[in-house]
Image (cartoon, rainbow, N blue to C red; front, side, top):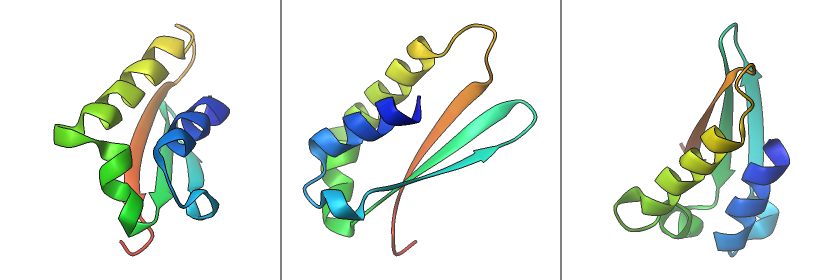
Length: 79
């Protein structure tokens, strides 16, 4: 699943070398934090968050039913 998230984010990011994905697993969910350069934030999130929302929808659809829920959060390196 992490490969899918990274692939989609890299399609929109211009500074691909600054893209990082951090994974934290809890009892009921897997939290994925995508770290980007400030200049890529708008491109990856999209107007009114449409790209970020679509990314979350794709991840939710690709997750098997018996698996843990994935939460995707997009942040810049400076936060």
